[in-house]
Length: 122
Image 1 (cartoon, rainbow, N blue to C red):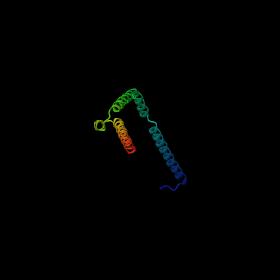
Image 2 (cartoon, rainbow, N blue to C red; image 1 turned 180 degrees about the horizontal axis):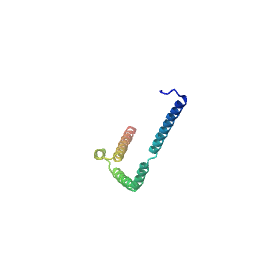
Image 3 (cartoon, one colour; image 1 turned 135 degrees about the vertical axis):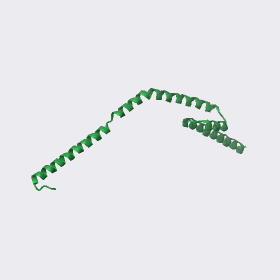
Image 4 (spheres, rainbow, N blue to C red; image 1 turned 60 degrees about the horizontal axis):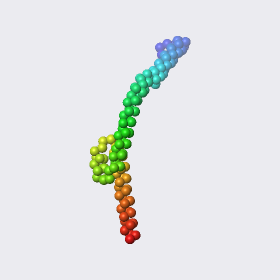
């Protein structure tokens, strides 16, 4: 603003543009380095190292659910199943118990329907 020489103004403007370009390049480099952080790859490595342990825990949970399912087959009282449901802590256990309760109730309804049909036919 202080100079009247046009050539000097051009040099100043080109220097300003060059500084802006360099600043943009630095910003792009910073962004690129944030996109490809090495921490993420080490996090994936941690997951690979913990995978056998989580796999073993999952298998143990599946075995426990299978044992619970067999136990539920032997129970024929909705009240007993309701007690088990209230005591259960895990979602999958509660899911199995609710399914067993629904199954028992459906069997009771079916038995009552059949009994009603037998009496009406007499």
